[in-house]
Image (cartoon, rainbow over all chains, first blue to last red; front, side, top):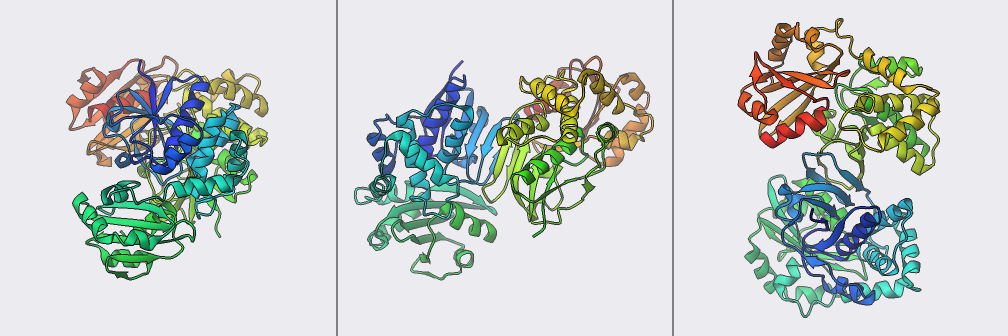
Length: 301
Length: 301
């Protein structure tokens, strides 16, 4: 029988790639036969971490050509492989809101923590499985990435101890310095086309009948990104979504602005209690799509 | 703030009641402030266990008059409190298929094991929390009930060790003898009206647009139950469901027959590869609704 495939969401980020690799390793140590794969190539930040710890990027798949899968860092069909309905989901490791339906009992380990890597760190401990140094490095990178170096409001009391332990296993003596280098590696946007920019980390959500697309980029200079606004808007229109919100996040100052195109401007303004000007809405203090963008939109729609 | 309510599914069975009590105790030991409640009064089997271990039945609620809840032994809205959409689900302990949607990240511990009590037994161990003897007795009863004394195909390699350990904690020296008495306590159907019979353990499922109601009773004599077929059918008609399948399970010989009323007889026959005669379909070897009734129906609809 084909191996069970372990993979994260479309437009993979560091947590999705690291968690697929870590979960696959853990499951194999516990007697399963799995392979970590990905629904896309690594972004610049993830590639920085893979290079740093000398790990090869997982094989890219479009569909799961297997009978059984384990989902990490996502549970919604819209973010998963196109043929999800044709395979058996045996397990899920996730830290997002849920919209999951299946027909057979399964394993789910979900916790509202900063990253799936954090959850997996404690799963390794509990199963008494030693984390290889390279994988620990990727997991530490995932925590840094998802929590913006423990500064995002998604950060919980579980993330810092996990990050410290993983950095130590990985031989990273100063995770703050490494973390800043990692985050900055993800903010070099100059080489990316407008389409790559808005697609890079975008996820689809269904909200009250609206097909919502929400993208996000990290930067150290929001205005530099907004200098490309007309090109970005053209790329957003081309995608054809009913609603598209493109969040630009300043990782140094923990603020965001977002470009919105769609037919629900008033609802967007209501959700964030700010006016949209020239298609741009100011989102002071917002850094987390999951915690600070999706919930107010869900409430509004 | 009001306590977090911990409860199982409508038409509570032994696993639902025991798991709500056990999960609430565990969460409180870990610093939460919770109360175990139930969506109905205990059935005869559950009452036998409650009496045996001198535990009071949980308070019955219709709606969750609180802000936060923890679901045990179910995750589908149709089986939960009517106002589920108005409260925050903070956690789920379950062993069923999933159909769950929410708007915020949460704790989920799901495993495809014989009972939620089995899952909780290992959660107690992992959290290093001692299980009080009375609660251990209820949890052992839940495993016995859901696995039909480890004979149901839903039984996993995790259930027997948990049952043995829990029986020991509870001071039950011979869990087979206790278990048979417990199961038999649930099969005295003579005092129950036809409506009580079909409603007792019934759950609603949405399958391919069909509103499906599936009830089940355990018995030691299927023919004795079928001698009430006309009354049972009248009660089923009265409920007004599009499809109603009432499964009658012989717990001694591990067989079932089911009464079916609805407009999809051909699909039912296809799902189980048996002919319906006089509204009754033979289901040899079938004892588990979750494992042997719902999946073939899901596949068919």
